[in-house]
Image (cartoon, rainbow over all chains, first blue to last red; front, side):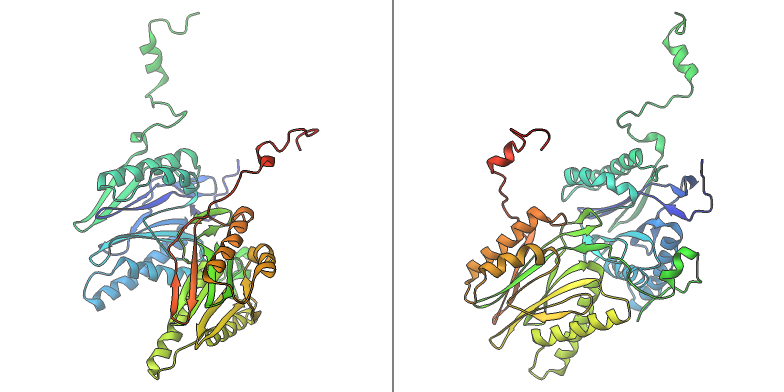
Length: 233
Length: 245
Protein backbone atom coordinates (compact mmCIF):
# COMPACT_ATOMS: atom_id res chain seq x y z
CA UNK A 1 0.00 0.00 0.00
CA UNK A 2 1.59 3.23 -1.15
CA UNK A 3 1.18 5.81 1.62
CA UNK A 4 3.36 8.35 -0.16
CA UNK A 5 4.06 10.41 2.95
CA UNK A 6 6.00 12.95 0.92
CA UNK A 7 3.00 14.01 -1.13
CA UNK A 8 1.96 17.62 -0.56
CA UNK A 9 -0.67 18.14 2.12
CA UNK A 10 -3.96 18.55 0.33
CA UNK A 11 -7.35 19.16 1.83
CA UNK A 12 -9.44 17.01 -0.48
CA UNK A 13 -12.33 18.58 1.31
CA UNK A 14 -15.94 19.52 1.20
CA UNK A 15 -16.63 23.21 1.79
CA UNK A 16 -19.98 25.00 1.68
CA UNK A 17 -21.22 28.57 2.12
CA UNK A 18 -24.93 29.39 2.28
CA UNK A 19 -26.82 32.69 2.70
CA UNK A 20 -29.98 32.82 4.78
CA UNK A 21 -32.40 35.49 5.86
CA UNK A 22 -30.04 37.60 7.99
CA UNK A 23 -26.56 36.18 7.46
CA UNK A 24 -24.46 33.28 6.22
CA UNK A 25 -23.58 29.76 7.33
CA UNK A 26 -20.17 28.32 6.37
CA UNK A 27 -19.47 24.61 6.66
CA UNK A 28 -16.59 22.21 6.07
CA UNK A 29 -15.29 18.71 6.83
CA UNK A 30 -12.04 18.26 8.78
CA UNK A 31 -9.81 15.89 6.83
CA UNK A 32 -6.31 16.85 5.64
CA UNK A 33 -4.52 14.12 3.67
CA UNK A 34 -0.92 13.49 2.55
CA UNK A 35 -1.37 11.08 -0.34
CA UNK A 36 -3.49 8.30 1.14
CA UNK A 37 -2.62 9.04 4.78
CA UNK A 38 -4.88 11.28 6.85
CA UNK A 39 -2.41 13.78 8.27
CA UNK A 40 -4.99 15.62 10.36
CA UNK A 41 -8.47 14.23 11.05
CA UNK A 42 -9.71 17.28 12.93
CA UNK A 43 -8.47 20.29 10.96
CA UNK A 44 -10.25 23.60 10.97
CA UNK A 45 -10.79 24.68 7.39
CA UNK A 46 -12.95 27.68 8.22
CA UNK A 47 -10.49 30.45 8.88
CA UNK A 48 -11.11 33.90 10.28
CA UNK A 49 -10.09 36.91 8.20
CA UNK A 50 -11.81 39.64 10.25
CA UNK A 51 -14.44 39.78 13.01
CA UNK A 52 -17.16 39.54 10.40
CA UNK A 53 -15.57 37.67 7.45
CA UNK A 54 -14.45 34.05 7.33
CA UNK A 55 -13.09 31.88 4.51
CA UNK A 56 -13.47 28.16 3.78
CA UNK A 57 -10.25 26.66 2.39
CA UNK A 58 -9.83 23.75 -0.03
CA UNK A 59 -7.08 22.33 -2.25
CA UNK A 60 -3.48 22.69 -1.18
CA UNK A 61 -3.30 23.22 2.59
CA UNK A 62 -0.15 25.33 2.34
CA UNK A 63 -1.41 27.55 -0.48
CA UNK A 64 -4.74 28.23 1.21
CA UNK A 65 -3.05 28.99 4.54
CA UNK A 66 -0.58 31.43 3.08
CA UNK A 67 -3.25 33.22 1.02
CA UNK A 68 -5.48 33.56 4.11
CA UNK A 69 -2.55 34.86 6.15
CA UNK A 70 -1.70 37.56 3.60
CA UNK A 71 -5.35 38.60 3.25
CA UNK A 72 -5.84 38.73 7.04
CA UNK A 73 -2.80 41.00 7.23
CA UNK A 74 -4.03 43.29 4.43
CA UNK A 75 -7.54 43.42 5.89
CA UNK A 76 -6.18 44.34 9.30
CA UNK A 77 -4.41 47.35 7.83
CA UNK A 78 -7.42 48.20 5.69
CA UNK A 79 -9.73 48.17 8.74
CA UNK A 80 -7.44 50.57 10.60
CA UNK A 81 -7.26 52.93 7.63
CA UNK A 82 -10.98 52.74 6.90
CA UNK A 83 -12.02 53.18 10.54
CA UNK A 84 -14.76 50.56 10.29
CA UNK A 85 -15.10 46.82 9.65
CA UNK A 86 -14.07 45.64 6.18
CA UNK A 87 -16.84 44.50 3.85
CA UNK A 88 -17.17 40.95 2.56
CA UNK A 89 -16.73 42.23 -1.00
CA UNK A 90 -13.35 43.83 -0.21
CA UNK A 91 -12.19 40.62 1.48
CA UNK A 92 -13.21 38.60 -1.57
CA UNK A 93 -11.44 40.98 -3.90
CA UNK A 94 -8.18 40.81 -1.94
CA UNK A 95 -8.26 37.03 -2.18
CA UNK A 96 -8.99 37.38 -5.88
CA UNK A 97 -5.89 39.57 -6.38
CA UNK A 98 -3.64 36.89 -4.93
CA UNK A 99 -5.44 34.00 -6.60
CA UNK A 100 -5.53 35.61 -10.04
CA UNK A 101 -2.02 37.02 -10.13
CA UNK A 102 -0.48 33.77 -8.94
CA UNK A 103 -2.77 31.45 -10.83
CA UNK A 104 0.05 29.32 -12.19
CA UNK A 105 1.47 28.54 -8.78
CA UNK A 106 -1.52 28.31 -6.47
CA UNK A 107 -3.87 25.38 -6.21
CA UNK A 108 -6.59 26.46 -3.83
CA UNK A 109 -10.33 27.02 -4.13
CA UNK A 110 -11.91 29.29 -1.53
CA UNK A 111 -15.36 30.33 -0.35
CA UNK A 112 -15.55 33.72 1.38
CA UNK A 113 -18.55 34.43 3.59
CA UNK A 114 -19.48 37.12 6.06
CA UNK A 115 -21.82 39.89 7.12
CA UNK A 116 -21.43 43.64 6.75
CA UNK A 117 -23.83 46.52 7.35
CA UNK A 118 -24.03 47.53 3.68
CA UNK A 119 -24.93 44.26 1.97
CA UNK A 120 -25.87 41.92 4.85
CA UNK A 121 -24.87 38.28 4.49
CA UNK A 122 -22.88 37.50 1.30
CA UNK A 123 -21.06 34.49 -0.14
CA UNK A 124 -18.33 34.73 -2.80
CA UNK A 125 -16.87 31.67 -4.52
CA UNK A 126 -13.27 31.89 -5.75
CA UNK A 127 -12.33 28.75 -7.72
CA UNK A 128 -8.96 27.92 -9.34
CA UNK A 129 -7.90 30.69 -11.71
CA UNK A 130 -9.13 33.58 -9.58
CA UNK A 131 -12.66 34.11 -10.88
CA UNK A 132 -14.96 35.75 -8.29
CA UNK A 133 -18.60 34.72 -8.30
CA UNK A 134 -21.14 36.13 -5.86
CA UNK A 135 -23.69 33.38 -5.15
CA UNK A 136 -26.64 32.70 -2.82
CA UNK A 137 -24.82 29.49 -1.95
CA UNK A 138 -21.46 27.99 -2.94
CA UNK A 139 -19.92 24.53 -2.75
CA UNK A 140 -16.29 23.56 -3.28
CA UNK A 141 -13.59 20.95 -2.79
CA UNK A 142 -13.49 17.39 -4.08
CA UNK A 143 -16.56 16.39 -2.06
CA UNK A 144 -18.68 19.05 -3.72
CA UNK A 145 -19.02 16.87 -6.85
CA UNK A 146 -21.49 14.76 -4.90
CA UNK A 147 -23.56 17.76 -3.83
CA UNK A 148 -24.51 19.53 -7.06
CA UNK A 149 -27.66 17.47 -7.48
CA UNK A 150 -28.46 17.67 -3.76
CA UNK A 151 -28.34 21.46 -3.69
CA UNK A 152 -30.21 21.82 -6.97
CA UNK A 153 -33.07 20.08 -5.22
CA UNK A 154 -32.76 21.14 -1.57
CA UNK A 155 -31.75 24.80 -1.76
CA UNK A 156 -34.41 27.47 -1.27
CA UNK A 157 -34.24 31.25 -0.79
CA UNK A 158 -34.85 32.96 2.57
CA UNK A 159 -34.25 30.03 4.87
CA UNK A 160 -34.05 30.56 8.61
CA UNK A 161 -30.75 30.29 10.44
CA UNK A 162 -31.67 26.82 11.76
CA UNK A 163 -32.77 25.54 8.32
CA UNK A 164 -29.59 26.84 6.71
CA UNK A 165 -27.30 25.25 9.27
CA UNK A 166 -29.12 21.92 9.06
CA UNK A 167 -28.82 21.99 5.29
CA UNK A 168 -25.07 22.60 5.53
CA UNK A 169 -24.49 19.85 8.10
CA UNK A 170 -26.55 17.37 6.06
CA UNK A 171 -24.69 18.25 2.87
CA UNK A 172 -21.17 17.96 4.34
CA UNK A 173 -22.21 14.71 5.95
CA UNK A 174 -23.44 13.30 2.61
CA UNK A 175 -20.23 14.33 0.89
CA UNK A 176 -18.13 12.72 3.61
CA UNK A 177 -20.05 9.49 3.03
CA UNK A 178 -18.94 9.31 -0.59
CA UNK A 179 -15.72 11.29 -0.90
CA UNK A 180 -12.59 9.58 0.34
CA UNK A 181 -10.81 12.88 0.61
CA UNK A 182 -13.42 14.30 3.02
CA UNK A 183 -14.05 13.07 6.55
CA UNK A 184 -13.87 13.65 10.26
CA UNK A 185 -16.20 16.17 11.84
CA UNK A 186 -18.50 18.82 10.42
CA UNK A 187 -17.62 22.36 11.46
CA UNK A 188 -19.99 25.28 10.89
CA UNK A 189 -19.62 28.99 11.40
CA UNK A 190 -22.70 31.22 11.45
CA UNK A 191 -22.13 34.94 10.80
CA UNK A 192 -24.79 37.60 11.13
CA UNK A 193 -25.40 41.07 12.59
CA UNK A 194 -25.22 39.75 16.15
CA UNK A 195 -21.83 38.11 15.68
CA UNK A 196 -20.22 34.76 15.00
CA UNK A 197 -21.12 31.28 16.28
CA UNK A 198 -18.91 28.23 15.84
CA UNK A 199 -20.45 24.76 15.97
CA UNK A 200 -18.99 21.28 15.96
CA UNK A 201 -20.68 18.06 14.91
CA UNK A 202 -18.56 14.98 15.62
CA UNK A 203 -18.60 12.22 12.99
CA UNK A 204 -20.40 9.78 15.19
CA UNK A 205 -23.33 12.12 15.79
CA UNK A 206 -24.24 12.60 12.14
CA UNK A 207 -27.24 11.00 10.47
CA UNK A 208 -26.69 7.58 8.90
CA UNK A 209 -26.96 7.25 5.13
CA UNK A 210 -27.42 4.32 2.74
CA UNK A 211 -25.58 1.16 3.74
CA UNK A 212 -24.20 2.78 6.88
CA UNK A 213 -24.79 0.95 10.14
CA UNK A 214 -25.46 2.06 13.70
CA UNK A 215 -22.07 2.11 15.50
CA UNK A 216 -21.61 -0.46 18.28
CA UNK A 217 -19.15 -0.73 21.16
CA UNK A 218 -18.29 -4.30 20.33
CA UNK A 219 -19.48 -7.48 18.63
CA UNK A 220 -19.87 -8.90 22.11
CA UNK A 221 -22.70 -6.50 22.81
CA UNK A 222 -24.54 -7.71 19.73
CA UNK A 223 -24.00 -11.35 20.62
CA UNK A 224 -25.11 -10.91 24.20
CA UNK A 225 -28.17 -8.90 23.26
CA UNK A 226 -29.31 -11.45 20.70
CA UNK A 227 -30.02 -14.26 23.16
CA UNK A 228 -28.43 -17.05 25.19
CA UNK A 229 -26.96 -19.19 22.38
CA UNK A 230 -26.84 -17.09 19.20
CA UNK A 231 -23.97 -19.01 17.59
CA UNK A 232 -25.33 -22.51 18.27
CA UNK A 233 -26.55 -24.40 15.18
CA UNK B 1 0.17 46.46 -9.10
CA UNK B 2 0.50 42.70 -8.94
CA UNK B 3 0.65 41.02 -5.56
CA UNK B 4 2.93 38.09 -6.23
CA UNK B 5 3.94 35.82 -3.39
CA UNK B 6 7.74 35.30 -3.55
CA UNK B 7 8.63 31.59 -3.72
CA UNK B 8 11.80 29.62 -4.24
CA UNK B 9 11.93 27.20 -7.14
CA UNK B 10 10.09 24.13 -5.93
CA UNK B 11 10.13 20.62 -7.36
CA UNK B 12 10.93 19.71 -10.96
CA UNK B 13 7.24 19.52 -11.74
CA UNK B 14 6.56 23.14 -10.88
CA UNK B 15 9.62 24.64 -12.62
CA UNK B 16 8.02 25.19 -15.98
CA UNK B 17 5.28 27.35 -14.49
CA UNK B 18 7.44 29.07 -11.90
CA UNK B 19 10.05 30.77 -14.07
CA UNK B 20 7.57 32.75 -16.13
CA UNK B 21 4.14 33.92 -15.24
CA UNK B 22 1.93 32.47 -17.89
CA UNK B 23 -1.58 31.11 -18.14
CA UNK B 24 -1.18 27.53 -19.27
CA UNK B 25 -4.80 26.45 -19.30
CA UNK B 26 -8.17 27.94 -18.46
CA UNK B 27 -10.23 26.88 -15.43
CA UNK B 28 -13.68 28.49 -15.45
CA UNK B 29 -14.80 29.04 -19.02
CA UNK B 30 -17.69 30.56 -20.92
CA UNK B 31 -18.83 29.14 -24.23
CA UNK B 32 -20.01 30.80 -27.47
CA UNK B 33 -20.98 34.41 -28.05
CA UNK B 34 -22.93 35.24 -31.23
CA UNK B 35 -23.54 38.73 -32.60
CA UNK B 36 -25.08 40.35 -35.69
CA UNK B 37 -25.57 43.80 -37.16
CA UNK B 38 -29.21 44.67 -37.80
CA UNK B 39 -31.16 47.67 -39.06
CA UNK B 40 -30.86 49.82 -35.91
CA UNK B 41 -27.57 48.55 -34.50
CA UNK B 42 -26.10 45.37 -33.04
CA UNK B 43 -27.60 42.32 -31.35
CA UNK B 44 -25.48 39.97 -29.25
CA UNK B 45 -26.36 36.74 -27.46
CA UNK B 46 -24.58 34.51 -24.98
CA UNK B 47 -25.60 31.98 -22.36
CA UNK B 48 -24.91 32.43 -18.66
CA UNK B 49 -22.79 29.37 -18.06
CA UNK B 50 -19.35 29.07 -16.46
CA UNK B 51 -17.94 25.57 -16.97
CA UNK B 52 -15.23 24.06 -14.79
CA UNK B 53 -13.80 21.41 -17.07
CA UNK B 54 -16.71 19.17 -17.90
CA UNK B 55 -18.83 20.33 -14.93
CA UNK B 56 -21.47 22.99 -15.63
CA UNK B 57 -20.51 24.74 -12.43
CA UNK B 58 -21.85 28.32 -12.59
CA UNK B 59 -25.18 29.18 -14.15
CA UNK B 60 -25.51 32.89 -13.53
CA UNK B 61 -22.43 34.45 -15.12
CA UNK B 62 -23.03 37.57 -17.21
CA UNK B 63 -20.68 37.26 -20.16
CA UNK B 64 -21.77 40.49 -21.84
CA UNK B 65 -21.07 43.88 -20.26
CA UNK B 66 -21.65 47.46 -21.38
CA UNK B 67 -18.51 49.54 -21.91
CA UNK B 68 -19.02 53.29 -21.69
CA UNK B 69 -22.13 54.58 -23.42
CA UNK B 70 -21.69 53.12 -26.85
CA UNK B 71 -20.25 49.61 -26.66
CA UNK B 72 -20.87 46.10 -25.42
CA UNK B 73 -18.22 43.47 -24.77
CA UNK B 74 -19.03 39.77 -24.90
CA UNK B 75 -16.46 37.17 -23.91
CA UNK B 76 -15.89 33.45 -24.09
CA UNK B 77 -13.00 31.62 -22.43
CA UNK B 78 -11.50 32.08 -18.96
CA UNK B 79 -13.84 34.14 -16.79
CA UNK B 80 -11.13 35.46 -14.46
CA UNK B 81 -9.31 36.93 -17.48
CA UNK B 82 -12.58 38.49 -18.68
CA UNK B 83 -13.05 40.05 -15.22
CA UNK B 84 -9.50 41.45 -15.48
CA UNK B 85 -10.22 42.89 -18.94
CA UNK B 86 -13.31 44.61 -17.50
CA UNK B 87 -11.07 46.21 -14.87
CA UNK B 88 -8.70 47.50 -17.57
CA UNK B 89 -11.66 48.91 -19.48
CA UNK B 90 -13.07 50.52 -16.32
CA UNK B 91 -9.80 52.41 -15.99
CA UNK B 92 -9.88 53.34 -19.68
CA UNK B 93 -13.44 54.69 -19.44
CA UNK B 94 -12.68 56.50 -16.19
CA UNK B 95 -9.73 58.31 -17.73
CA UNK B 96 -11.82 59.09 -20.79
CA UNK B 97 -14.52 60.65 -18.60
CA UNK B 98 -11.98 62.63 -16.61
CA UNK B 99 -11.04 64.60 -19.74
CA UNK B 100 -14.59 65.95 -19.55
CA UNK B 101 -14.30 67.17 -23.11
CA UNK B 102 -17.58 65.96 -24.52
CA UNK B 103 -15.92 63.05 -26.32
CA UNK B 104 -16.53 59.45 -25.35
CA UNK B 105 -14.88 56.20 -26.34
CA UNK B 106 -16.63 54.49 -29.23
CA UNK B 107 -16.62 50.81 -30.15
CA UNK B 108 -13.85 51.28 -32.74
CA UNK B 109 -11.51 52.73 -30.10
CA UNK B 110 -12.33 50.06 -27.52
CA UNK B 111 -11.80 47.32 -30.11
CA UNK B 112 -8.43 48.74 -31.01
CA UNK B 113 -7.39 48.95 -27.35
CA UNK B 114 -8.41 45.35 -26.74
CA UNK B 115 -6.57 44.17 -29.85
CA UNK B 116 -3.36 45.77 -28.58
CA UNK B 117 -3.79 44.27 -25.11
CA UNK B 118 -4.50 40.75 -26.42
CA UNK B 119 -1.69 40.79 -28.99
CA UNK B 120 0.92 42.11 -26.56
CA UNK B 121 0.00 39.47 -24.00
CA UNK B 122 0.32 36.81 -26.74
CA UNK B 123 3.81 38.04 -27.57
CA UNK B 124 4.85 37.51 -23.97
CA UNK B 125 3.44 33.96 -24.05
CA UNK B 126 0.99 34.97 -21.32
CA UNK B 127 -2.34 35.31 -23.10
CA UNK B 128 -5.65 36.43 -21.70
CA UNK B 129 -7.52 33.24 -22.47
CA UNK B 130 -10.57 34.82 -24.11
CA UNK B 131 -12.19 35.42 -27.45
CA UNK B 132 -13.89 38.81 -27.30
CA UNK B 133 -16.78 40.24 -29.29
CA UNK B 134 -17.05 44.01 -29.30
CA UNK B 135 -20.08 45.78 -30.73
CA UNK B 136 -21.67 49.21 -30.60
CA UNK B 137 -23.18 52.22 -32.34
CA UNK B 138 -21.76 55.72 -32.31
CA UNK B 139 -22.91 58.68 -34.35
CA UNK B 140 -25.09 56.43 -36.46
CA UNK B 141 -22.22 54.11 -37.35
CA UNK B 142 -22.67 50.42 -36.48
CA UNK B 143 -19.56 48.50 -35.45
CA UNK B 144 -19.04 44.80 -34.78
CA UNK B 145 -15.64 43.19 -34.27
CA UNK B 146 -13.82 40.29 -32.67
CA UNK B 147 -10.41 39.72 -30.99
CA UNK B 148 -9.00 36.31 -30.19
CA UNK B 149 -6.52 35.28 -27.49
CA UNK B 150 -3.67 35.34 -29.99
CA UNK B 151 -4.54 38.85 -31.13
CA UNK B 152 -6.35 38.05 -34.39
CA UNK B 153 -8.73 40.95 -34.87
CA UNK B 154 -11.34 41.81 -37.49
CA UNK B 155 -14.80 43.30 -38.10
CA UNK B 156 -17.74 41.73 -39.85
CA UNK B 157 -21.52 41.83 -40.21
CA UNK B 158 -21.84 38.78 -37.99
CA UNK B 159 -19.34 37.17 -35.61
CA UNK B 160 -19.23 34.26 -33.20
CA UNK B 161 -16.77 32.62 -30.82
CA UNK B 162 -15.87 28.99 -30.19
CA UNK B 163 -18.53 26.54 -31.24
CA UNK B 164 -20.54 29.43 -32.60
CA UNK B 165 -18.08 29.66 -35.47
CA UNK B 166 -18.95 26.15 -36.57
CA UNK B 167 -22.65 26.03 -35.80
CA UNK B 168 -23.96 29.60 -35.89
CA UNK B 169 -21.96 31.32 -38.66
CA UNK B 170 -23.20 28.96 -41.42
CA UNK B 171 -26.78 29.80 -40.45
CA UNK B 172 -25.92 33.50 -40.42
CA UNK B 173 -24.18 33.32 -43.80
CA UNK B 174 -27.40 31.94 -45.23
CA UNK B 175 -29.97 34.08 -43.45
CA UNK B 176 -28.37 37.39 -42.45
CA UNK B 177 -29.45 40.55 -44.27
CA UNK B 178 -28.49 44.21 -43.93
CA UNK B 179 -32.04 45.34 -43.06
CA UNK B 180 -33.10 42.86 -40.38
CA UNK B 181 -35.66 44.28 -37.96
CA UNK B 182 -35.21 43.84 -34.20
CA UNK B 183 -37.74 40.98 -34.14
CA UNK B 184 -36.11 39.19 -37.09
CA UNK B 185 -32.67 39.66 -35.55
CA UNK B 186 -33.71 38.23 -32.21
CA UNK B 187 -35.37 35.23 -33.91
CA UNK B 188 -32.22 34.61 -35.94
CA UNK B 189 -29.98 34.75 -32.86
CA UNK B 190 -32.36 32.45 -30.98
CA UNK B 191 -32.17 29.98 -33.85
CA UNK B 192 -28.38 29.99 -33.51
CA UNK B 193 -28.49 29.70 -29.71
CA UNK B 194 -30.93 26.80 -29.91
CA UNK B 195 -28.60 24.86 -32.23
CA UNK B 196 -25.73 25.57 -29.83
CA UNK B 197 -27.85 24.31 -26.96
CA UNK B 198 -28.53 21.06 -28.80
CA UNK B 199 -24.97 20.48 -29.96
CA UNK B 200 -22.53 22.22 -27.55
CA UNK B 201 -21.88 20.23 -24.39
CA UNK B 202 -20.88 23.30 -22.44
CA UNK B 203 -23.99 25.30 -23.33
CA UNK B 204 -26.74 25.82 -20.75
CA UNK B 205 -30.36 26.82 -21.29
CA UNK B 206 -30.22 30.28 -19.82
CA UNK B 207 -29.29 33.15 -22.05
CA UNK B 208 -29.30 36.89 -22.46
CA UNK B 209 -29.64 38.98 -25.60
CA UNK B 210 -28.15 42.47 -25.72
CA UNK B 211 -29.17 45.33 -27.99
CA UNK B 212 -26.96 48.24 -29.02
CA UNK B 213 -28.45 51.25 -30.78
CA UNK B 214 -27.78 54.98 -30.98
CA UNK B 215 -29.98 55.38 -27.88
CA UNK B 216 -27.77 53.12 -25.81
CA UNK B 217 -26.93 49.63 -24.68
CA UNK B 218 -29.35 47.23 -22.93
CA UNK B 219 -28.92 43.64 -21.79
CA UNK B 220 -32.06 41.54 -21.43
CA UNK B 221 -33.12 39.60 -18.33
CA UNK B 222 -32.03 35.94 -18.40
CA UNK B 223 -34.47 33.53 -20.08
CA UNK B 224 -34.64 29.97 -21.48
CA UNK B 225 -35.42 28.56 -24.92
CA UNK B 226 -37.92 25.86 -25.82
CA UNK B 227 -36.38 22.76 -27.31
CA UNK B 228 -37.94 20.28 -29.70
CA UNK B 229 -37.70 16.54 -29.24
CA UNK B 230 -40.77 15.42 -31.19
CA UNK B 231 -39.18 13.75 -34.20
CA UNK B 232 -40.69 10.32 -34.75
CA UNK B 233 -37.18 9.05 -35.38
CA UNK B 234 -36.32 10.01 -31.81
CA UNK B 235 -38.95 7.84 -30.18
CA UNK B 236 -37.63 4.55 -31.46
CA UNK B 237 -34.44 5.02 -33.41
CA UNK B 238 -33.38 1.39 -33.45
CA UNK B 239 -36.70 -0.10 -34.54
CA UNK B 240 -35.97 -2.33 -37.49
CA UNK B 241 -32.22 -2.22 -36.91
CA UNK B 242 -30.06 -5.33 -37.25
CA UNK B 243 -28.36 -4.89 -33.88
CA UNK B 244 -27.91 -1.91 -31.56
CA UNK B 245 -27.89 0.72 -34.26
